[in-house]
Length: 193
Image 1 (cartoon, rainbow, N blue to C red):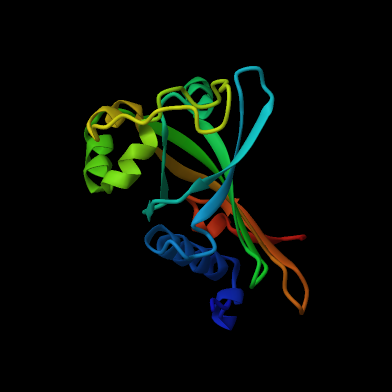
Image 2: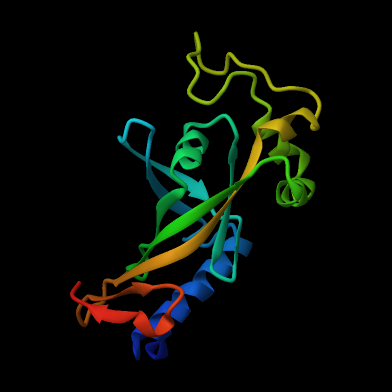
């Protein structure tokens, strides 16, 4: 069980640091509550899109996710490369929201490096015949390619550089919130929850 140590609540910066340690652990541990994040962005018409996405890695302020190159989010992020993510741990009442700048990696060295690490079963997730959201006559009426090489064409890595953070801690002693600019730790300050 994860608990917020009292030292993490001593300052807004220490709470930020605790959250960053949680992200690092979530990138390595599939059972961590922050492994799944809620992603929000706008489509090309300006309508909101929200979905769950799996955190694959966190390193030096950059979150890594995988997606299908043919997905609506790739089209939206190509037009406007920013998104918001929200991580929540219900057990300890800790929410960590971030605004990120996004870089998309498709068939480049970064994409190749992550692709090589994927299991064959994970690779087949990118081999479905129709594009995401394509109409089907019935469930499961699509095909997966036999080769694990072809799905690489559909594999894309999202690198999300954190710009702003918003931490909300639902605490029995009283809710607390800290916000600020990620690149300037001294800007992280307590705010009204």
